Structure formats: structure tokens, C-alpha cells
Image 1 (tube, rainbow, N blue to C red):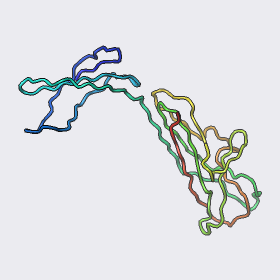
Image 2: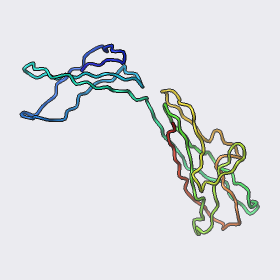
Image 3: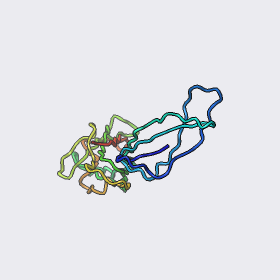
Length: 203
């Protein structure tokens, strides 16, 4: 195996190795290992392959164009989350603040991304006919219901090949981010629900 860069320069070294072939086989599929040290992301290389046997018979040359993909990674880490208690003095229409540390982390490498969330709200564990909705409040105090898939955060620039951690909640104050809305009198008790998170790469 010989490898050439996009300017036609041969890279140092020739990859050699033995391939075990079944006796009498006329066709087959075989792995040709090649160490990719030194090849650069987003560049195209030419791989030229020749095979020889124990009698020094040499095959024709097979040629492959290989483009090295940029290193990419995109992961979401979400911890459990809670809201403060709604008490008897809470006003209808008020937003209930978050409780404790909300950890919503996006780990990314070499990619733009967006994060959205969707939820039908929190429901009383004893009687699910009682519920409270979730809203996302942006920095301009615009409120969007999580009943629809709602954009929460995004990164519009491609970061470097180094891994980057973005803590979404770092940008939230007590007055914005995801909040619970007290929309009408409700049954006392514990309320639970789910948030569907969608993290996707953007162009």
C-alpha cells in the first residue's frame, strides 16, 4: 500500500502485510489494515494497492481516493431537574422557579448544533387530570410553551477539533430558561413529567 497526498507527493513508508487466502478460493473479501497517522482532516489522499503471491506474481494496481472526515462529536448530558414548591400563596399565572442545579451539557467537536425541548407538562402523581405546563422564557422575556418542539440553545459557529463543553443553564437567570407556569388552582401533591430533548447538527 502506498499513499499520496493531494499534490501527488508520496507519504513516507510503504504499508506491507500478509493476507491469508483460502486454498483454491477464486473470490473473497479481505481487510487491509493501514495506520492513518499524519493524515489531515478534510483532505483527500490516494491509496494505491498491489498484491503479490509466494511466486512473486504481482497484481494490477488498485487505486482509491479517500477523503478524511473532520473529527466530529455531539453528545447531550442531562441530569434530573426539579421546581420549587407551589404553595397556597402562589398566584395564578406566575412562573415557578427551578430548584437546585440543572445540568444540561452539550459536548461538541467540530460541529454547529441546536438543542430543542418538548413536554406536555407536569402531572399530579395521584390524579393526572391535574397538570401544570412548562414554558421556555428567553432573554427578551418571550414565553414559548414546550407543548411544541421549542428551540432552547444553539451554536452557529464550528468549534475547533478540541472538545467543547457548553453548560446550557449557565446563561439562565431565575427569570428565564425553562420554568413551570401556575395556570390554575391544582390538587396538592407531587407532580412529575418528562422533557424530550433533541440535539442535532446544523449546517
